[in-house]
Amino acid sequence: MKKEQTVDDHPDSVVDTISSTEKLLAHVVTPQLPWRIHGYDVEHDLARHYSLLETFLLAFTGEIAPENYGRALEIALIFLSPKSVAHDSTHAGILTQVIGASPSPILSTTLMILTEEAQDLIKRHELLLNLLNQEELNYLPEEFQTEDAQERASVERLALALEETGITLPFKEFSRDAALLYTLHRVGLKTPLQLCSVIVLSRLPAIVAEVGYWQKGKLENYPMKLPNFRYED
Image 1 (cartoon, rainbow, N blue to C red):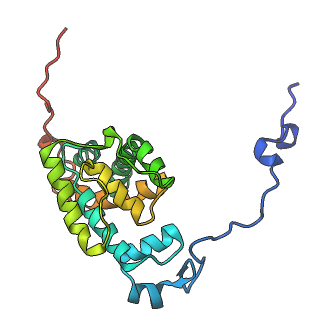
Image 2 (image 1 turned 90 degrees about the vertical axis):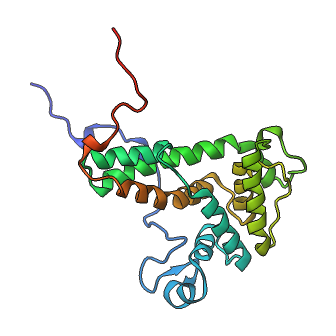
Image 3 (image 1 turned 90 degrees about the horizontal axis):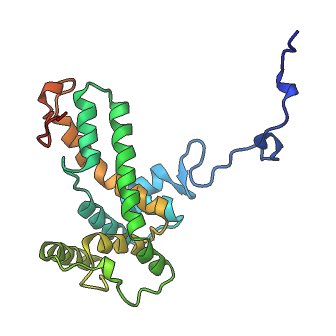
């Protein structure tokens, strides 16, 4: 007769052998009212005296940032915000909407692809971010430069918008993406997770708005031959 196995018959798993703490510690947000972020009262202090983006910087860095940093972050995120139907994340959100999905799968699909796009952007600028972290950006590597006239004009507009914050771009040859990542790093966002989070945050509203223009469950409104293709034997 085959012996019935019980949990006790199996050796300990790796998890079972770890001597772990018995509590899940809160490091940023208090676990109950009154809510605090890094010790700052959310309702009596942050909501009354600080902007949303200054609160974000507090959450990310653990410190109240200078007021000009909050404004510089706002400018950078506005520059980062456009994502048209030509981008995979927006396209995926639209397709999920027209097949009749609810908000949860629409947002989860969009966010997954949007995060991959942001992660790819950060990966392509890994050298630049390493130089910034080491405070050794004495030159601008060629891969972070641009000679495209429209892109240079966009970087000039970014530099102009940042003038009020006192933050200057050290290289006029910056590509648009490099200039924006430099700005995010300058205000204290230095890790891939921090950078990815704010990039996704900046781009989601425009994507959701674009998705909202498509009628839910109306697959016939979706261009099925985009691009125009044909099957061949």
